[in-house]
Length: 444
Length: 61
Image (cartoon, rainbow over all chains, first blue to last red; front, side, top):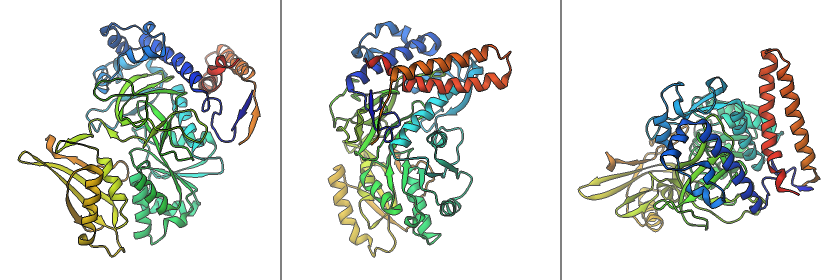
């Protein structure tokens, strides 16, 4: 058979597989991992038995939605017991586990994540799809300004760079200025970081080193860890600051690097549907959503991870299907990447509110700096929204000139009114990894 | 974009052969770790070839 794009796709067969064949492949792989989980995991067996479900109940594509979902709490309840620390969630003999990682635990106790060497290879393979789709090649020297640790972030970025053939520079131990100088010294061509840190580095380059980040020669930036690279105004700020293409990717501890933006920048991320199944379901009813532009939450299955499988994991991440991409991939696109989490999308003054929409406004105004902070509080029975921003240096703007337009755009975008505070440039918190700009004080 | 002629069935057959050879090597290693551990790594890479190629062969006639 003729295969088109051996130089363009990491796997030109799987990435362009016709949809009906792709769904057949997914069903075959779903059944395989479902049986593995039931046969080898006390946790999955317990959940399925209690629900009166058996893996053989899945015969057609439509049956998949009948499989009970697994929640983060299910892992937590099964863990911290023998075989230590994975307990009933472990599906392989402990001596087969070669990798330990954990979730960040930002919403409570972290989940422990074991992987066999084969699982680890799989996760790196998933990232190879990401890198190749974003134009990373063996001619690239990739700088990773991040210290890898118990969290899964960027480990696969490193190993997948090796797999693709890039030269990878681990810049974890250095501070921001040292990292920038190392990028300059080595003439790195690509960078991986959170959107927050991409902007922080650019700012430090200008203000502390008195250099223009555009002169450093970075041609592409892979973002991960938080929304931003698919917030159009934030992406534009990053691309402008570095004179580089900025690409998004979404991944996580439970599911690995399951999605990627390609060089066509379709306004979202392709789901790697050959290696995992991503279902979009209604947040309230759990009904499957197939049509574009309707928000829902993501239910994730990773097909071939064996030590601790992820089978219909309720990620609580919110997104929506988008339109077909022109790149030729048949993998569907999630429009706008991740929009936030179900538990972050909250009602303020009776209006459904997503903090990411404020970022789009702030980053769209050149008079404002990159940083902001958003606080929801309560005065009596009324919700109060406070937005803290900084004026960008050298624009000549004043709070009086910026405030009316900012308030107008916020009202248009979110249908809400804000108390706007202007702070001195550089005074709001700066972050190296995931930013914590949204604080809901009502929940205390 | 480069277009190439490939034979998926032939590729899948060779992947199966590699797997078989590595498993045979492990069987005669006498438990030498320098053999077994490296074979284990090769088999993990072979699994990636199966995921990328062998798993999809049945969908092409």
